Length: 112
Length: 113
Image 1: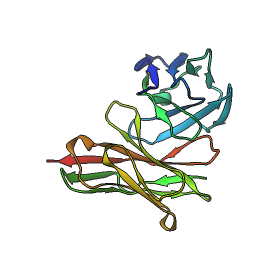
Image 2: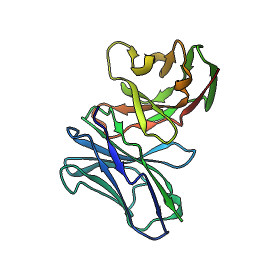
Image 3: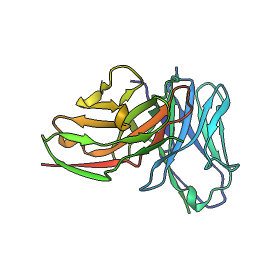
Image 4: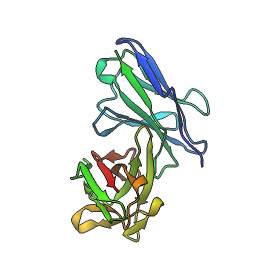
């Protein structure tokens, strides 16, 4: 069965540094998402993306965050200047448009 | 705004016993409803979904869920739990033509032998 793959599985970075989290969505999916889960808390929506544009973003997704589909297969989340509170598990997901999201295994981001 | 409530943070059941995990949602129109399961260190796996039609939906791993509009609920059930079902379960709601799913806080299922 096709999968969403995320790299790296774990990223450690210092406060103020930029990080890029990478995702390869399922190949015939057209809708892409980023969610995050702070340890012990809810799975929170960050952003959805379709047709090379952001469809919707949450209040969390401020100017420090950006997304990009640089080529036909990758979907990236960039955090420009990381803060301690950005430490979380970040999940990429994709769908065919019916909101049945298929998730990757996540990237654990640790900001020190 | 959409919201999802999972009233039970933890549930413990014996292996072989039946299971019901509760989910209530708040949404004006007909929602799209989902249940996901997350094992430790893993992503979220889709168990089942409801868009319209028959209010009892079947999913993978022997799970089913029933949409009850009058109660704004979408409870997940399994007739006989296996030890491998121990995981965290998330209910989620979306809307037709919507751009996101909103997740509940999750219910951690423990299975005792």
